[in-house]
Length: 239
Image 1 (tube, rainbow, N blue to C red):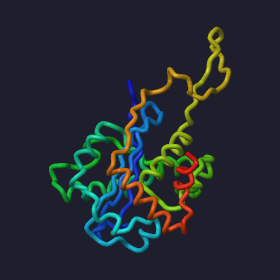
Image 2: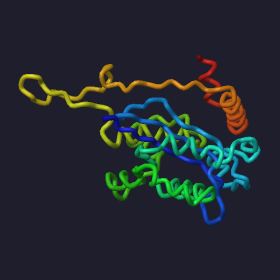
Image 3: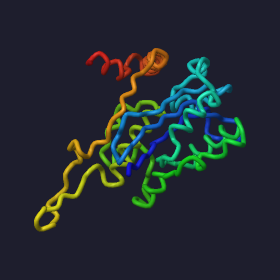
Image 4: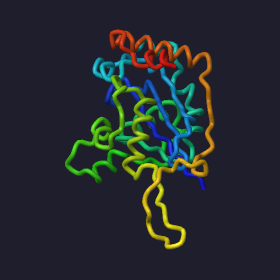
């Protein structure tokens, strides 16, 4: 039986739903049997409201950039179809779940809440249980589990979901499998699960023209914010 998990993150116009703040980006990374499939869901959203200066400093997503993006109501069915029957893996789940539930309610009470479609696992609660009395934000967990997050100058929903997927796998034992001697049954060590029989069948989804335009707009924004030091430009040139 395949175990399907969706590592999810959002970016918002601000921190407080009660002040009418909205989701402006959703990023989802799919894991099947603890392996990344690259079958992801990513969408920027027009919130129809101003973005707080504090939030803008965190993610760098401007209202101007979002003006021509769809609204949550435009993509809600695609989103719900993507997460249906999976386990959502979220860091500080109450925040993201609260915002998603608010967006669903704005569209129609008939849509219900996120837990009507899937289960939710909070990695912040897991980290607090594993490391009580310590900092357990995502940056700290990356350092603790030696996950490379050096390319994370600004927060982004898809980028943070990808990083959280690595952190989650490290927190829950990595991608290792116990090896037993075939004759004695004794433990002879750990091995990375990199053989073909352990790999889930991968689905490759290529960006369409609209997504490529969005990507280019985002790179331009990162260039402006970083003074021309956008790392993605360096990667693209290297390829």
